[in-house]
Length: 172
Figure (cartoon, rainbow, N blue to C red):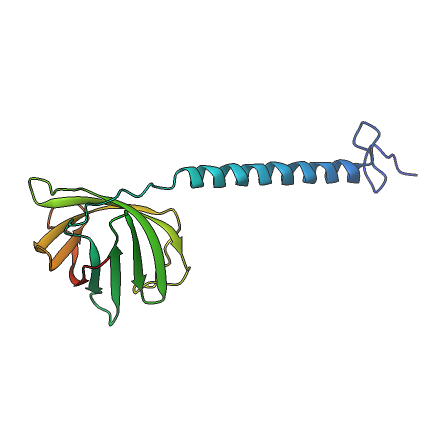
C-alpha cells in the first residue's frame, strides 16, 4: 500500500483531507478571487466613464460631419449633439461617444476635443480597426471655413491632421 502522505490517489494535504479536495477548494477560491477582481475592474471602468459636457446650441461643431477616409472608398460620419454625446459611423462600425470640446478656440484657433467610446457594435471601421469601449482620445479641431469644414489634429498644430470633415447638416 502507498503512503497517503507522499502521493497517489489517496494522498492527503497534510491536514487529513484528500489532496483532490484541497485542489478543488483552491480552484473554488481562485474562481471567487477572479470573479471579485473582474467585478472590481468593471466597477472601476464604469466609474471612469466620461461625463458628457453640454455645448451651447450655436457651437460651431454641433451637427453632422462627413470625412472621406484617405486611401479608401469609405467615409465616416461624425454627429455632435449639444448634450455632449455623439455618434460615429465608419464602414460597419457604429459607436456612441461622450465628449468635451472647448467652448472657444485657443489663441491658435484650436478647440481641444476629448472623446470616449461608451458603446460600440464591435464591427470594423474604414481602416479595419475595431474600437474598444472606454477608449479615450484627445485631439484638436481646427475650423477651416467656419460652419463648413474642419480638420482633426493630433496636437494644437496643423502638422498632423486628418480631414477635412465637411458639414452635412446642423439640426442635432
